[in-house]
Image 1: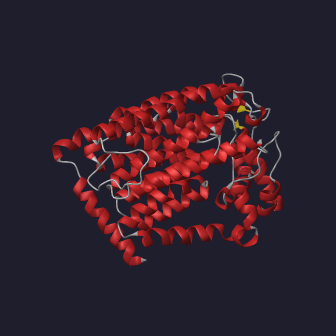
Image 2 (image 1 turned 90 degrees about the vertical axis):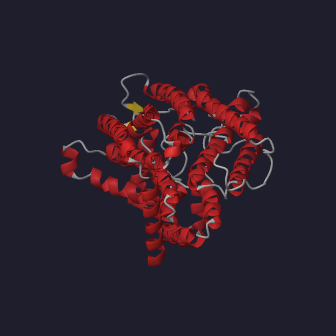
Image 3 (image 1 turned 120 degrees about the vertical axis):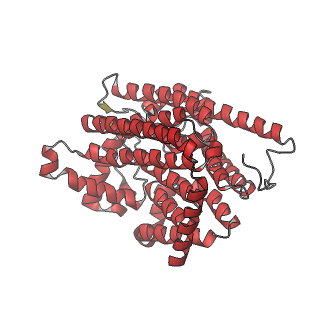
Length: 445
């Protein structure tokens, strides 16, 4: 393990030396990076201000109830019974690390010293995401400098640093999604540095926040397998995951898999399921639990299609460069969001950094459309400005009301996929969509 880590560090140093800009280039690059960092710090303090002075959404309330359940009854009971706080509210569906953090901030929030200074549970819940956003900007600045042939424009980096989507999700919403996304950015960064061991560690950590990163595991597995480093990636991933999941895997595995691995988002709140729900057919109506037969079949068909598509992306692109792995992540997320039967508003931060690295122009359109959708979503939950608390009071609540606005980011992703496929086929007319033919190593897009 020590030899593997030493080898990873050595290869990383070699890449750093190779990607270092010349003296003539360094001054404007440094100025741009300082501007981006300054913008990220402004956003950081804006998010802190919002988190300190607001309660957040339903998710904050439910996490607070979950923390009490964990404190009183433990993880198994909470997985089994959940907390029915709102009508049709889902059971606890997060991995054990999130449960541990909820217990920790529950303890901190009851400390008299912190209470006197207004440090509450809702603030502590959002704090890791706010810090994670700042870390993500720092890593993206480094990636920007490492890939001069595809350097992200300063305007796009500034938009990411000041993203209204990130401000609303991390500063107001209250969930763990920004932390998960940052661990995935770190995973991709370690792939660029050719450090499989650290890549496995960061990927394992992302899966401890939410289970959805496992969707991208085939991309990473084929990437490292092609570089004869699959073992150095897999061992830390398996070890860390086993340590983190040992309690539920040993004591209540079926309950753990049911809650965490078979989680469903709200049907009819996004994309294809929204259009099907508009038909008013009873078989396409539903919210969270007990979907009708037709809706269940469609949902599982879409999920299976997403998994198959990601597997094909991983297989066909396994010989491409390290930089192309980031594009593979972007393709995987775009396929997921186009075909997912349900998407919650805070999920928009999952793919944002990878869309930025893939296509800054597309990121601009996606951010604009997502920001509008999220603004109307949160504004509906809070009954207008100023926002303090956003509560969905029936079934999918604001998700159903804001679904028409959510069509804009959905359409932006569809347009992006179509545009880049057309561009790829113009470059290589022999390229086929429904194929498992491996792309040659010299390709970079």
